Image (cartoon, rainbow, N blue to C red):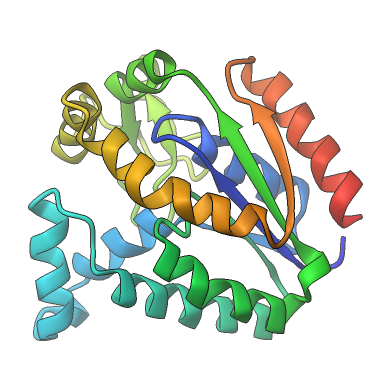
Length: 231
C-alpha cells in the first residue's frame, strides 16, 4: 500500500497501541510511531542527560504533567520527515494530543503524503472499559518496542520483540491507571485531545471504530476502513 498516515485516536486504554502494532505488521511499509514511547525513550536516553529542555520535559513526564505541546510537536515533526524520507508511512497511536500539535502536524503530513493519504480512526470505548484496561496494563521494557500487554501475560515473551514481560505493573502504568480513576486523564482527553480529534475530523478522512469488540473484531473494522480510504 502506498505510504500515508493513519492516526488512531481515543481514550487512554481504548486499545490504540495494540491495533497500531497489528497494522504495522499488516502493512510493512508503515511504521508504528508511538508518541508516548518516543517521549519515554528520549527523556530516559543518557545522550540527553545534559539537554536542559529534555530534562525539563522529563520532570513534567514523571510529575504526571502533559509534556510541552510545542516540544512534542517538534519531536513528532522530526520523525515524520525522517520516515517519509525513507519512503515509509506512519501509524500514530494517540497523537496528536492537543489542537496546537494537530495544527503543526497536519500540514506536514499533507506535505509529506498528500491530504488524501491521511486517515483518522476514532476508537470508541466506555470509560469503564478504558479504566479496566488501564488497571491491568504492563509495558514491554525494551525501549525500542514498548508493546502494551496485560498482567495476564507477565513473565511471558513480548509478542512483538520476545523480551520477557515484567512480572508486575510498572510505576508509570500505575499512575496512568490512578489518573483514570481520579479523572485526571479523562479530563485531559476531553479538554485537550477531543478538540484535536474534532479539528482533524473536519479536514481529513475519518472512521469510527467500536473498540468494545474483541481485538480481532476491532482489527477487522480498522482494516476495512484503511482499505476503503487508503487503498
